[in-house]
Image (tube, rainbow, N blue to C red; front, side):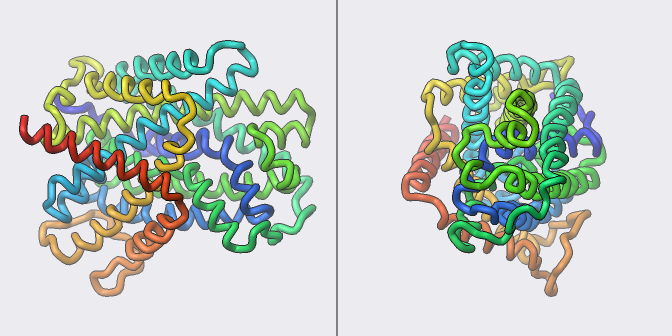
Length: 421
């Protein structure tokens, strides 16, 4: 049974904003500020530019191909190599598992400061509860996510508003480690931008997808980028970067400094809702990718089973839940979490190269949206996206590269076992 087409521009944009403006900004701004100092706002600007380059490539590709397997589908159309497209799709699935587990553990860590309970128990309970919500269908999840997203954005807007009286109180061009520190911080905060690409996985559940997907994708990047840059300027205006980098709850510390310690706890509440949104949408899009790869015969057909009433791919949903829970049991998965951003840049590189290749080598490639700034048939923005993604790969350690290669190896084994079955 096919997935139900129920999503429109607003709900899809809110899905994107909900994924982008989620747990990352509430947790990572402190660590990144420790690297960039007062130049953290420039790191967010660079992150926005990199995201926009690749976002425009996703926008064009999604207007030509509406598939739950998204990146894997793009690479398959470009390369005609099933194994390569599967590896790309597999890396995105791994990122989904890791992101859901990491953010769930972060949610649990915040909540234990209010309710003393085992962290792992809270994280697992959260994943199960949100997976059950996913089983009710994408339309129900969209309505819940809108609420979560509005609350999350409200927390960001509060910090921006609190910073208004402090604007101009510091030197915003005082970079802690020079421009290299700004770039280093970009590799950290880019996790906060991850999510815009997930929108394209709703292609089979979106009305007039060829038109709506590109618009929603670009709108979510624009909204999130503006919020991030304003937030970072506000945060360092209120709290010195030396103090901001030393706290595990940076935005709560900013609110506490601007108002009072009690108000800091209020910001923690907003952070919890941001994490709820991130985990919910992360679980949804990962399950849809499992569904999409099954459609391409790269995973067992059992992942195609959908509920006759809700349209939810319930085997894919339950499998995503199990995968996320399994990683929760590892406890501290910091190294794996950092490797996810490396995997994301590998995926972005593949997507941009796929678009360039399709422009020149696929006569049946007819996107309804074509990204601007072309030299003849060459997409300049996709070229910049590929170059930026490639350069960012060198910002990660051998450990994070090794973890990625290990997951690639697991993916190769799964692929060939499925093909032999």
